[in-house]
Image (tube, rainbow, N blue to C red; front, top):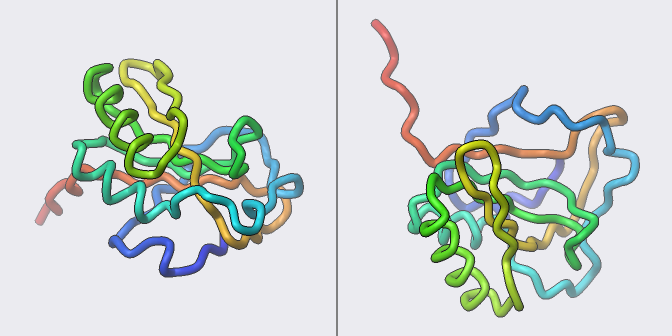
Length: 137
């Protein structure tokens, strides 16, 4: 995935092997020009401050921006508070909340200015907000 570096002002480390969706890179494109959605870095800052566990950036056919940041929270209360904060901060009508496993995700539309991916790849980036485990010596 080729995203402008200024989209990610935080120090993110992609985690590979988590996405199990079928390859769809050939059908995914960038967000429409002048799309009024926030960039992923803006969403990530708000998510980190709200205590999110993980954030993933993925394509979405239901989003006006064609992409969403799905932000994972351990409780519905935290997800609901973040959904309201994100809706207000980014002037969005709503941010969907869904039960995923034992947590809740909030889908926030995001702006992806350019997109390129090799054929047969999965367009997804996962970011952990948890500190990495200490290295064993």
